[in-house]
Length: 223
Image 1 (cartoon, rainbow, N blue to C red):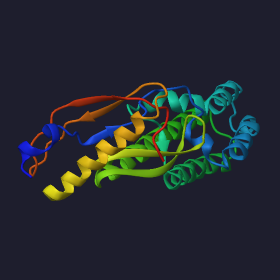
Image 2: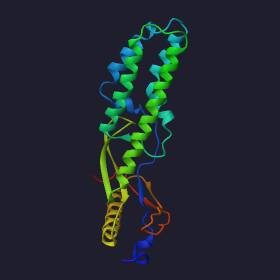
Image 3: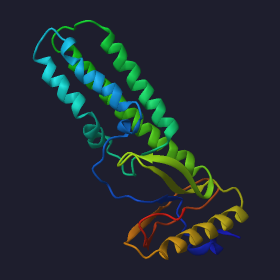
Image 4: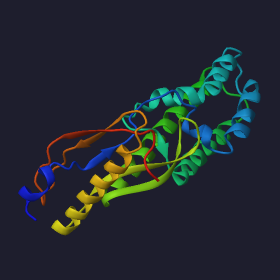
């Protein structure tokens, strides 16, 4: 099968599902230890600074940690993270927070500044974790999915992508067939309307694939 015989020669190589954004709790709050940890942090914040002005500032930072996390992620894909990566992020954040709380009292301004630094590092870790999982998913050939937890409501979810790592014409043909079957099955659900966006991708071993957008119906991908 040459390039001209591929259906439309237009099968994009990244399948983006569920691009709708929503207000969310924040990825770290999906960790089972979050409530206990941050309850401790909030209740002991008054022992961490010599300056009384640091206490309310730090209290707000801790109370709004989850909401601000979602505001700062700025992701163009759904905030779905694997359990393994969530555990890694949570462990890194709790380690830094526990070290900060092991100190006695800090000079004015130091404690809230350290909280902001930990917060920014947490956002970076979550962004990297979500994006890395998507990239790994695309290294397969054809439709592939992996289990995640949704940062929107902390429920179990899964991410579906179209991997472009196909090495032969027969693999591309099978991948194309699987993608079209997937879209057809999703379309038959007839509940709501979503867009499945397919982006072009250029590789040295395959020609450029043009942008295609296919409208499908459904509120969830078929399991």
